[in-house]
Amino acid sequence: MAGRTDSGIPPGEGPEKRGAAAPGNANYVLGVLFLVYVFNFIDRQLLSVFIGPIQEEFGISDTWMGILGGFAFALFYTFAGIPIARWADRGNRVSIIAIGLAVWSAMTVASGLARSFTQLALARIGVGVGEAAGSPPAHSLISDYFPPERRARALAIYAWGVYIGSALAYLGGGYLRAHFDWRMAFIVLGIPGLLFALVVRFTVREPPRGFSEHAAGPAQANSLSETLRHLLSCRSWVHLVVGSCFLSVTGYGILLWGFEFYTRVHGLPPFEIGIWMAAILGIGGSAGAYAGGALADRFGPRNPVWYMRLPAIVTLVGVPFGFVFLLAGSSRVSMLFFFVFYVLSNVYVPIMHTLNQNLSRLRMRATAAAILLFIINLVGAGAGPFLVGFLNDQFAVHFGTEAIRYSMLTLASMGILGAFFFHLSSRSLAGDLAKLEA
Image (cartoon, rainbow, N blue to C red):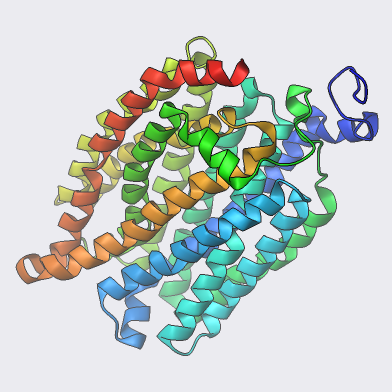
C-alpha cells in the first residue's frame, strides 16, 4: 500500500523507531511504568494510614474523611482524565506521564504542609489531577509495546503497582505513624516521585501507534464521542464496566479503611498493622492480578468467553472469605482470610484493562482507558471510601467502634453483583471481538 511500509508502519516510523519496541526495551518500559504506578498508589493510599491523627488535629467525622479520601480525590481525578487522555491519543505519552508524576508528587508534599482541612483537601485534589495523567497513557504505551497475546500479563504486571504501592504506603506509613507525625510522612514519601519523573522523561521512548500489531491507526485520533459510541455499542464492555464498578467500590473502600479497621476493631499497634497490610496487599494483590493476567492469556485466545467467565467464578468464590475476614474475632484469622479474599478479588483487574484495550481501536486506546477509569474511579474511588465513612457514622449508634466492621461488610457483599455482571459480559464478548476484527 502506498505511503506505508510492508509491516503497516507509516513512513518516518521505520527501523529506528521500531527498535524502540524491541523486547528488551519493552520490558524496561514496563518496569518504569510499573514504578510510576507504585508512586501513584503510595501517594494515594498514604492518607488511609493517618485517618486517626488527621481527625484528631482537624476535628472531622468519618463521613468527612470518606469525602476527603473518596470524592475529593476521585471527582477531579476522573474529570481531568478525559482531556488528558485525549491529549495522550494525539501527543507524546511519555512526557504526559512524567509531568503527571511530578505534579502529584509535589501535591503529596503540599499535603504535608497543609495547615487546615481545606488546604489538605485542595492538596488531595491536586494529587488527583496529577494522577489522571498516569494510567490512560500508560495503558496505551503498554498496548503498543506488547502484542495482544502478551498484553494481559503485561497489564497485570503494571497493575502490581496498585498493590506494591499500597503495601509500601502501609509499611512506610505505619513506621512513620509510630515514630513521627503525619505531615512528615507525606513530605518524605512525596519527594522521590519528583526525581523519578526525570527518569521517565529521559529514558522511555515513544513507540509508533499500533506497533505491537504491526499496523498503523488513522492519522487522527478518534473523537471522544466516536470512542464512547464504539464502546457503548459493545454489550460485553457495558457489563464489564458495571461489574467492575461493584468490585471497585469494595476494593477502594477496603483500601482506605482497612488500616483503621484493625486499629478500631482489633486494637493493633500501627507498625504491626502496616507490616500485615503490606504483606496482604503487596503479595496477595500482586498474586491475584498476575494470576488473572496469566490465565486470561492462556485461556482467552482459545475461547474469549473465558476472559469474563474466569473472573465471574473467582469473584463469587471470594465473597465468603471477605465475610470471615470482617467478622472474625481473632486478628490472625481475620488477616488470613483477608489475604485469600484479596487474592481472589483482584483477579479481574488485568482482565478488565486488557478487554478495554482489546475492544478499542488503535487511536482511541488512551481515551478508552480514561473513560474506563473515569467510571471506575468516580464510582469506586469516590463512593467506596465515602460509603464506609457515612455508614460508620450511622452504625455507630448501635455498634460503637465496631460499626466499621458492618460498613465494610456491606461493601464486601457487592462482589455477588460484580460476578453476575461479569457472567453477562462473557455471553456477548466473542461477538463484540469478532465485530472489531471484521
